[in-house]
Length: 466
Ligand SMILES: C[S@@+](CC[C@H](N)C(=O)[O-])C[C@H]1O[C@@H](n2cnc3c(N)ncnc32)[C@H](O)[C@@H]1O
Ligand code: SF4
Image (cartoon, rainbow, N blue to C red; front, side, top):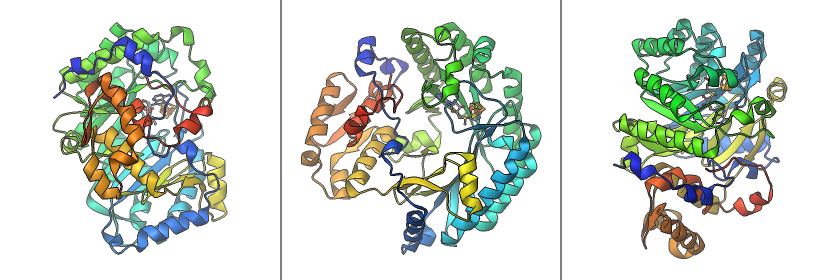
């Protein structure tokens, strides 16, 4: 197992590899998708997906996007809608109900949901009664497996004991809490005041109520963060003993999220300090017994994510890392993404547009992409790199009916250059990502991205890789 030391990336290498790049939550990445993808095409995709001989046996994943928050955190890069008027939820929930009514008849009645995630925004902006009503509505139209994983993102500042109880009654068993940083100066500078005690109380109660996995989100690169202040935050986090941790590098994209201009750039740590904070966090997590799964995520070695990674069977979809392979993802709500038979569909990205389309009885498809066979192949490669850090050339040749070495001679030659910097190891039959390559995984994936060269001409699409 790698020690914290293996993750060290020398400064000059970081400088060499730091450039804008996708995070590969999908391949092909969203900017490549077509705006001409129509609701009719979405229906064809639903039909084809449920017409296959084994359709009733195919597991299903659902994502529900609940965009509302009471106040804006200035760093926020999510698809949110800020409102103190809780009645905004009423038309939105009505639109969600219409979407469910339009989509569920396409789903083979034998299919069962094995995974559902509610993200946001802040899903606990809904009242406990609304949470129970929405879950019942979904379960009345689509069957759930009794062992389904139901997870939710919550903001501890607005989540009450009643919310947690309603979530447990509705079958939620995994919870993820946004923290970012416990330091009061940092909290002030990001417009997010969140006392440690409130978070600790909710975590204790979640455990008592039987949530089987608790995740905490942290962020580095925020104003006033120092190595010493973040060490204090980490000590507080460990006292809460989360099962999983996410540590995000603050993505500063003010051209996409204008509210980020409120972040005082003079107070943001310089790149040396950011790197020192990141290295501190990695060594701290490893010392505390977590494993770096990749792409900002850490889990215990006996967590199912770690075990799946050991067996090279870890997968990733829009909801994050998962152990469930071959599951179609149906997304509901504004901006949500569906991934069906590997193809992508995205819903309208603004609440009024989403609600309007549904009030006219139309599917809210905004854009999408049908993947060609070359896309499926490259998508599989990028997923293997991010999840399992390993490519087996023969397995990929057999699965996709290509001669891997000749088909990807340019990519293999380019990968060999990264091997010189010890980001990976490569031989005639496999490619293995090394710990420092895990840190620069976006750079490794970029080699296999067939669209990147054209995209690179368009400035400002992606945040920096390091
Ligand atoms: C939808 S929010 C979490 C739930 C809830 N709204 C909250 O804030 O507690 C998901 C996570 O995305 C991360 N995030 C948001 N904006 C980000 C940004 N600009 N860069 C990196 N991570 C970001 C934060 O860590 C946040 O906890
Ligand atoms: S970080 Fe969470 S609570 Fe803050 S604005 Fe974004 S989604 Fe809302």
